[in-house]
Image 1 (cartoon, rainbow, N blue to C red):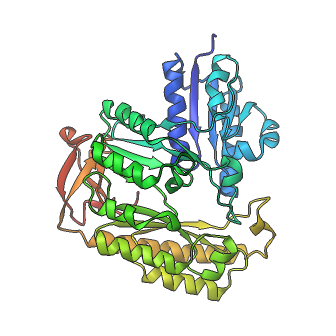
Image 2: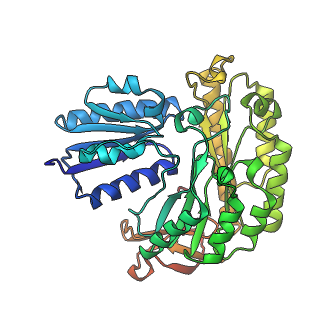
Image 3: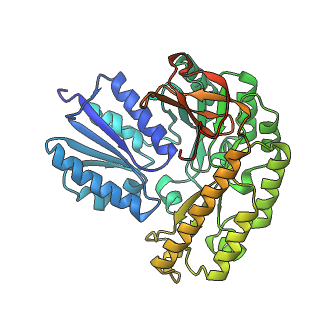
Length: 411
């Protein structure tokens, strides 16, 4: 096969990033090379919002103009939802959904395409400091606003034994931090008779990787034994990402979420009691269909009362085929106003959290980037810091005293 150069572009979440990195690694091992004038352009698509879909379409058009002779291959969530539409885009040669994304490699190698597997493991390795390790995929929840369950398929996961082998591989690369990822991460192991808590326990006992972070965990699956494990761990970082989506019980019910705000409050209280220094980030959607001003204010007051460090704010995006798309919609101008208020609250919460630790010494894992004489890193509890570049600190955990000047609000 004469064509050997490729480029890869990722839209969306950390799970997508992990899968893209894994595909890039497999292509390099097969003799392909990353190139500025690629023969193949690979795009990992996202379908969470209408904006993500527009980004994919615009990216295809841009890359096709820049490299008209290149074959464009698209996979991922949007490819799973709208393959027929994508195939009509100029320049697109092949489309693979989430379930058959592992077909990309044999397709580029000109081999016979394999059957769809139950679970495809992947981990990123482009960054020598940290790696995203996918341990779970798919979702059996069907929230009324979301297309991910349809795009990613039913919940499925790796086995604990195979995850540990993956961590052994990652450890040989000298990577200091691993982020466990999945679509519904804490649903890990349910089909195999295993559990997320058991996976974390094995990782803790192994001490293979100095730092482990847990990505998004549903409130109803954030069991107290997981919180207790993190509280007593030497490896798992005091950092939680918990999707709330709304602080209004009425809206949560319309979303078909599997918890109410009282349960969420209970989880937050448990974390802050046992891990006072924990960084707690949440997801929140503004302008969900039928959200009244009273609903929003109720939610806003609830958020303001919580000891949060960051809000990932998403403006509601109408997704075709979802139940929420048929509900009465909130005006765009109102959604925008509510989003801005939530973003302001997030910045306030984040600065308050950062300021709590000014003057303290925390362990910081520094990265290799040298940006105008500065290097960056994250504390155990996810405070981003900057300091003059020191090559001896690259990919090392350093005890570092935080100052107002060294802490950065942007991630």
